[in-house]
Image (cartoon, rainbow, N blue to C red; front, side, top):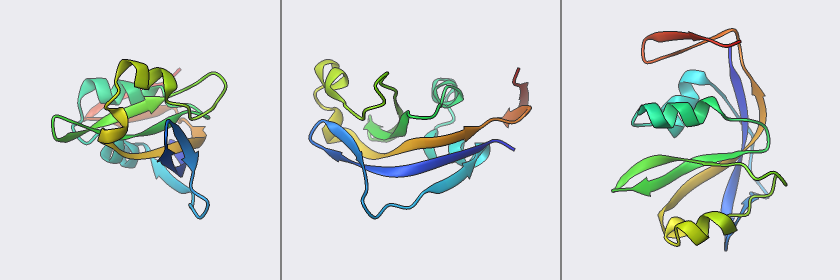
Length: 119
């Protein structure tokens, strides 16, 4: 079964930083989709398919509904500087974010009643 280990982060100015007293959470694929792709849109599910260690995932408000947020910086920092240049309202719409500490994919992942096989 696919498993994702996440660590909660907070937004401090233009940076995502781990919470001092945060606790890791473990989610399987259906739980990850339910939490970070509540609309089950194809775009959100494709974003989650690319989750990797060192990335940040979470939710931001878009049109009053939560939307999937994904950030991966090559230096593995939580800097939102580049994103804020494109969208200065990002910090105002921030809901939650987690750092991805571990990802384990299994042979197949099922979403929305369709089975997909990983290679």
